[in-house]
Image (tube, rainbow over the protein chains, first blue to last red):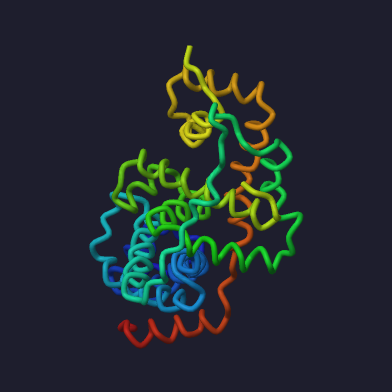
Length: 201
Length: 80
């Protein structure tokens, strides 16, 4: 019997775990748990993330025998984690929708930015100008206010740094739709950061 | 030549950054941004937004949640 090592590839570990080797499964859990937890916090909330984390690895374990290596193991696991988070979100009480449209950029009648360059730039300094704790709290809250479709695309593409094609695969939408949603999310969040600093977006 | 104003340029940003715009549209956008201080400032903040929010939402897995996960999985999975 092969002893799973911390350096074994995901695919090797997956095959061993699927054949019933629980120590191989533990290595997989150890390798991915922090990333899944972070993803769960971003897609649900700090309160819901522990449940999503548990559900994800239970699903991973159950579905290991059907992992065929058509996609990378990490992508496959991320898809399970994303689905677990989305299922969990659907099952919990929904917050009332709060529009973020007010944070979209403003233009004059001729299509020129209404704000000055200094005003337009300010969001890029949010991390210098705001206290770390405050920004962390505000960031979590505003991401939760995004429409779900924008939030999912933004979290995977921009916060988890997943390539657009992979996000499209995970969410089951076209890459063009991913780009459109991420774009809208960025516009709203950028405007929100400006607003936090007391500047109209 | 494609005409780009600030408003239409903003709508092209994501596709520009991802490199999926047709070459002529892409150069028209670049030309506009190069000559527009407002757009240059806007692009800087648009590009900074994901990085700022990524850093602000970094979390580490608390040891108690890691321990609960282990207990949860051990209870549901055969150990051989």
